[in-house]
Structures are given as C-alpha cells and as structure tokens.
Image 1 (cartoon, rainbow, N blue to C red):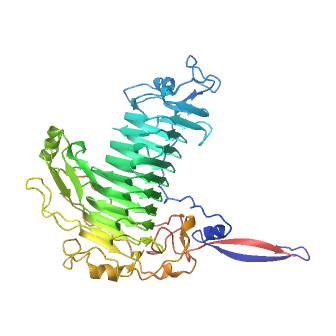
Image 2 (cartoon, helix red, strand yellow):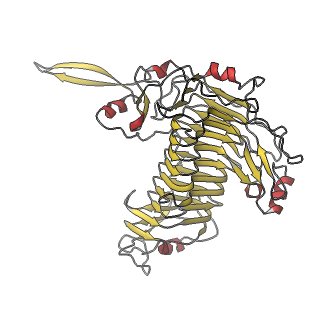
Image 3 (cartoon, rainbow, N blue to C red):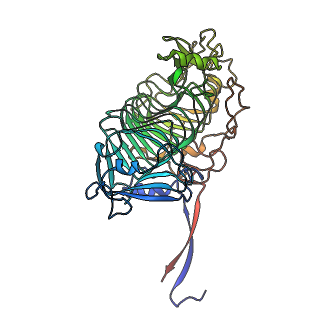
Length: 536
C-alpha cells in the first residue's frame, strides 16, 4: 500500500470481548442489560409463506370495505378474522392481518379466536403493520384450536388475564408485549394442551400468579424475553410439558421464584402419553434471574432437566436459592378423566382429594452463578432438596419417590449469606451421604460455595458480566454430561435428544470448553477486530 507523506498507518489489534465491551458502556453510564443473543437456530423459521394481506385501521377503517389495502382498511379485527376460512386447514393462501397504528378496544376483536388452521406454507399472521410499539389490543385474547398462528410486534394489555391458548399448534409470539397491569392477571400468558409453541423477544408481565403458565405443552422454545412482575413463579412449565429450550431470558421481580420445571397439576388436565412427570426434557440455559423472593430456579417433579450457565442475583430472601422438590398430582373433579389417564399407566390418583408426590430424575445443575450481595441472602439455606416419600399404593408412582435420583450439582459459583449458611441437607432431606451423585461432601468439593465473592461489572445496574480478568475465571467448571438412556415408561413417551450443550453464551459468543460459571463466557474468549488507525 502506498502511503501519503506524513501519514503513518498503524494497524492495531483491538481485543474486543462481547462479554467485556458492555462494561465500557457501563462506565459511560449505559448500564441497561443488553439484549441477549440466543444460540444459532434458536428462533422459529417462518419461511417464505404465501399470504393474502388484510388491513385494519381502528380510526379510519370501515368494515364495509374489502380490507385489501391501507386505503380500503377494515375497522375491526373481528371483521378481518371472519375473512379467514374456518375449520379446515388453509390451502392456496394464508392470511396476514396488518393492524394500522392505534388502540383496539376489546369489542373490536373476537371474544373467541377459534378453529382457524393455517399451515407452514399458508399461515395466519397478526401483526402491527408499522412495527412494534404502534398497536395495542386492549383486552383479553382467548384462542382455541388454532394452528400456525403468528403474533408479531403487538402489545396486548388488560387489567386481568391477557392471553389464553388452548389446543394451539405451531403458535408463535415474537417481539411483542403482554401486560397484565398492576399484577391484575391470574396468568398473563396461559397455554395448555398445545404443541409447538414459541415465544421470542417479548415482554410478559403483570400477574398475581404467573407471568407464563404452561400445562401439557410439548415442543418449542422461550428465548430472549423479559418475564417479570408476578407474585408466584415468574414462569413454569408443568402438567407433562416437554421438549422446551428456555434460553437467554431475563426473569425478575417475582414472589415464589423465577422458573420451575414442573409444579402441581390436576391429573385430568394432562395429555397422553406425558402422564408421569410434571416436566420432561427441558433445557434452561444462559438466563439471568434476579430479584425473586423465593428460589431463582427449581424442579418440582421433572425428568431430564438441565440448568446450565445461568446467572442468579438477589434470589431466595424468604427461603433458599435453588430447589429440587416434589411436584404434586391431584384429581380436581373430573374423576373419569383421572381414571382414564391412570388406566393408561399414568401417575396419579383416581379420586378427588388425594395428592401424590411426583419425583425428580436426571436433574443436572452445571456451571451456574448465584450472587447475593452483602445485605441479601437466602433466609434458611442454599438448597431445598426433599427427602423420600411414599406414594399411595396403586398410583403407579415409583416408591419411594425421590427428588435426588441422579441429581448432579457441579461447577456452580454460589455467594450467598454467611460462610456457615446451611446447605439444606438435614437428616430428613435429600442428598444424604449414601447418594453417589449428590451429597454434602460432594457439593462442597464440586462447587465454589461461599469461597469466591464474584467480581461482576455492575449487577446493581443490570450488567451481570464478569469483570475482565476477575476471579470468576478461576472457578472450576465442568463439561456438560449427556443424559442417560431414555426411560421406559407406560405409556411410552417419545425420547428426546440426550445430548447437552451450551456452545454460546448470552451474548452469542462461543463458549470455550466448559467456560465460566454464569450466563456470560470467559472474557479471554475474545473476538478480535483489526482496525487501521491513521496517525499524522
């Protein structure tokens, strides 16, 4: 390269860590938690569908028009929805309902959105025509028996329940906001007896119980969302929910806890063949959970559940930091359905009033970071791990039921309260000395529990990344093991992949080896950028 006189070209290697660079922004006063970058393949691929456009304008529209352009827009969403054929799967074309800016009163959209069946090539899309932040549906969206329905760039707000979806198939929520008001919703988003559900890049808030509540939902993911402001758990998947990746979410400001795999379910609401555990094959990776009164995360009756590389901050003030306890199984009134599920081999009671313990099996808790700063600690103990229980004879539940069957807790950095805070393994609890995978001596040996006060950039300001060359890098972590062979159950449950991996961090950076504990990769795993600097 030929240089002009007096100009020196100096090539400088800028070692720019995506995990460290936000700390520079923090020093400049930019402290908001950065948008997470889920791993490759995390988002649902809509493809290139064939659709017919319909337009709705809440201000200047008219339901007497065709609705085929902005200038011929309908006035109500109900009128547009009525133009989508009902009952049979769509052929030839799908429908894209474009909502023009404005606020849509509940009276302008359907009371029941039901029996519309898109396909992959011909889906039904409901979107804000001019992008996120331009459209608000004011009221309750109640969906039943819909397929290939995509909600994009919408806000739905209600002083009460916001969205319910039953018997939904291939249901996508993307870049949207669901607001239950001042914790006025029973559930902000409630989905049950559905499959292939995807929630991406959205905000879900405002419940006196759960911001997200799934019952008997299989296949999908929940990635890159902000889930917060609920009095119970922020989010749980239960009732035989299975095959979900919950990745790179921010979960915060909730009561009972952040996230749990499983909980308690009426036997009659479950779907065959997922009639045993509360949750199967869930992978909870690269999430940030903060400011929960109860546990940051836990399992209540789960099988093949992975918690890897999550960061927890200010959790468990009223109880414990993490929990691995029993799920519950009752029969809430529809006795015939309970008996039918039991006859298939499902686990649970056949009469009203009984409550059975649902055990855990193959729970892996690897390379997480739990940091409770000075003045904040779990009230009683680090972990809640229940001791064995005896289910009712004939319930089909293994006896004794255990919460610690192949429970593995390794590579975690925990800074929580005083040095002598109880682990939570009293004589009647789980993880007793005879348990080869989980016991007090093993937990102390395989985890950094109150031995390393983690150096994070600015957790109070929302930046949970480790300090460059700080002490988090010195904590021993472990490669994620695969799950053992899939269990033989009656009825038989489809097997999931047994392979566990967290190849990238919350910022989308490759994770070298087992990496650092927490949601962010080792700062030494830089992306280097080569820039020319011209110096006269």
